[in-house]
Length: 471
Image (cartoon, rainbow, N blue to C red; front, top):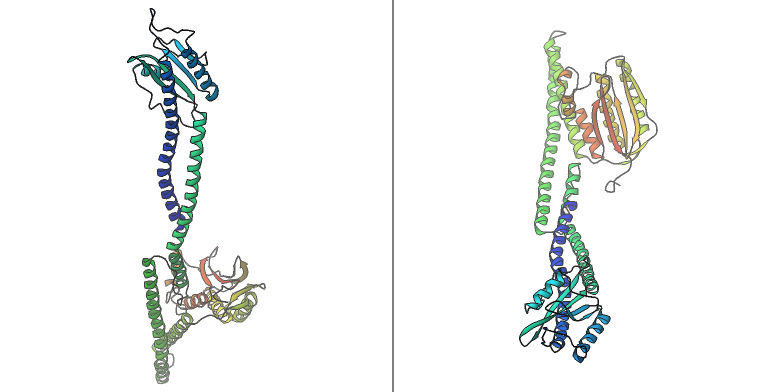
């Protein structure tokens, strides 16, 4: 969840910073250019004040007098201005003839921004808002001011300023803004990490506790982990629910155990009366034999129910166990039963240590091997193999019996379930359920699959090392 929530917060914060940073960067660029424009306006106004006393009317219109000291002063000012600042400047009559210019090779072009500013100045308007020049553009700032004498515009002062310094200043301002945005983004990411951690910490604790309960650790509860009040209330409600579920399961187990135990004595008395009644009936009576069989089956079901209740309630005493040696011992114990039925029992059990309760694992293996021998026809083989598999030790029991369909594999191990094809074989349908409960108590598991060409494959897994809460 944090991988989805954190990018969303970062994107939102980046959008906010961009929404603030872009206008600020534009404002910095415009402020730098406005500063240059104001300076050029002041300069052109000063040059226009000098130029208005240079021009005079004559028979041929405005003319320049080479001996005019004001013209020499104006030319000197323009030349010095160009040499110091590198800004092209010129005073041009209305007929575009230069009164004075620096450099002397600079004249009015026929078109372009310079010509447009000159024409605008002839209309007695000063340049106020030239086109914005951005740091990546190699543009010029052109400013023109009219030269007015006796109320008439007789000439115009035009400046064409390079923008290297202005663009560099703008770029510096942008770098400062970028550094500030980057620092703000780092702070925002840190705040987002803290916020998501604070919000999701109770969720992670709740998820871990739910997994523990789902795997059989019913005593697990959600510890206080801070976070929003809503999640704290959810954690409290979850603990209340877990307590209630544990109480209900405990009552169910107690009921099954008590019922199984209480029914055994009346059932034993009933079986005894059946035996006494059988003494008064003719030898070989089919009805009394059927009643005996059903009575014994009922007694076996009650015993298995009691074993299942105890298995689900008991805690496994885990320790480092040689799974290979223990499995070999169970194979040897079941060998006479298999031999009596004509089934070959083959074991491949190299020394392999795992983390298990020896008594629990022995009982589980007994249930699995008993099931394999029971359903395997004579002259077939039941194979038991022990091997390490990653962080677990597996005991794989395969037989060459009739096997199960995909639908039956989905239900095998359920309580009191038996395949319709095997109803005539002795059993209560609780053996594999007991096996699963015993293994789950020790962090183990059991799974079922097909064995080619036919038969069933049962895999028992136990961990190779102990978990912290088990050690």
